[in-house]
Image (cartoon, rainbow, N blue to C red; front, side, top):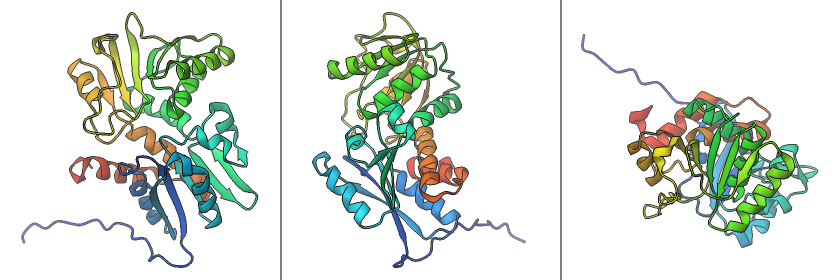
Length: 297
C-alpha cells in the first residue's frame, strides 16, 4: 500500500451573518498587521461567530473611528502605532492597567461605554522571558523609543526592578518625560536619556523603524555597538528579521522579534472581549504561519 498524507482539518468559522460580532485593529500603517490571522483562528477554534478586521486610521480621525466602532456595536478594538497614547483621552474609563502604564492598546465596548486597557506591558515581560531567557530584575536595558509602546515598556521594565534604563528617542523631550515618570514612581531604578557607555543585557526597539524595507536602523551604532549587548528584542515582527536584528545576529547577540509580545497581548485582549480563555497554541500557530509561512510551523 502506498504512503499517503493525513491532512489535519482546521476549524472553519461560520458564515458571516447579521449576528456576527466584530473586532478590529486601528493603526497607521496597518497592512503589516498579523492580528487578524491570530484572532480569526482563535474565534474559529472556539466556534465563535466573530470576525476581526484591520483598518487604516489616521490619528486625526481616531476619535471618530472609535465612536463609529462603538455605534456599530463592535465588541472591541486594538490600537497600534501611533494611537496608544492618544486613546487615553478618548475612552470613558481606564482600566487599572491603562492607568498604570499610561497607554491604551485595547478597548472594550459595553453598555456603560468604552473601557481602555493595556495588554502590552505584561506581554513584553513574558516574551522577554520566554523568547530570550531574559530576567529583567537587575538588568541594564537600552530602550529605543518613547512613544506609546516605548513608554509602556519603560515603565514596566522599571516596575520589574531593572537596574538601569537608557531611554533614547528621536524627540529628546519625550524620553525626558518618561524618565521623569520613572524617577517619580520607581526611584530605585537608575534612568538616563543617553546611550550607555558600556555593556547592557538587552537592547529593546519600541519604535516603528523596521516596518518599511528602506527604514534605517533605530540604533545609532556610532553611539553604541551591538557587540556590547547580550540580547536584542525588536517589537517589529514583519519583516521577521529587521535590519536591527540582522546586525545583532551578526554581532553574536541572542535575538527575537515581536511575535511573542503580539501573541501575549492579543490573547489577553481576546479574553477581555469574549470572557473565554484564549486558545494560545492556536493563536501562536496562526501567527507563525502568517509571519514566517507554513514551513516554520
